[in-house]
Image 1 (cartoon, rainbow, N blue to C red):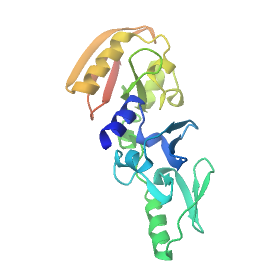
Image 2 (cartoon, helix red, strand yellow; image 1 turned 90 degrees about the horizontal axis):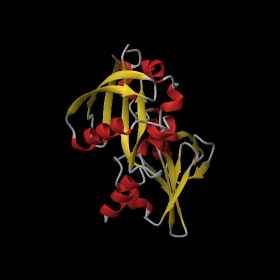
Image 3 (tube, one colour; image 1 turned 90 degrees about the vertical axis):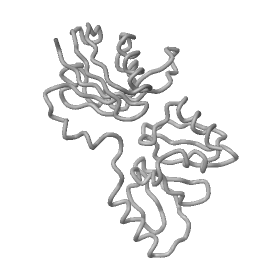
Image 4 (cartoon, rainbow, N blue to C red; image 1 turned 135 degrees about the vertical axis):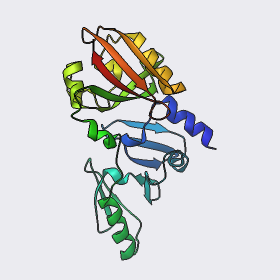
Length: 223
């Protein structure tokens, strides 16, 4: 039952950290993302949720599942999401809602916040996720974490890079870099690559390793 959903999630490059909530109506599940995008599918909502880490979503009513990380508040059985959307949950006991509100006060860490200790490191560091590309290049990468030095190195703000694809940030990105990152993300291990980066007009040495499957972490140094 989960193989189809797992393949769907991977091929569409869906990452749990970007999903605010899911709704199911008329046999279709709609995935609502933080950036406002929506994706419809005939995969059952419960099957999709089962492929994500436990606790990523709360099914609050029939056909409605919300991410605690994007739930702003619960009041009188109404869940208010980060985008302002509200949902009415099932009628539950006062004890249940108190416990639920307590969970929301301790929201799970999204993305790679645990790497914030590297925010001010004087070496560029980023974590990128391998996804299938929809622009005919086979695969692409999404920036999941960038420290402050990446702004100086790449001449882009963190907001311009984070949760954006490699090819949308660097339209003429050099394919050789992406192929190396893909190999690390898929096969693990580590590599040190060096060469000219036309995106920024600099020679770079990049230390790459796999923090977890489908991800590549990179430390970048000018040479």
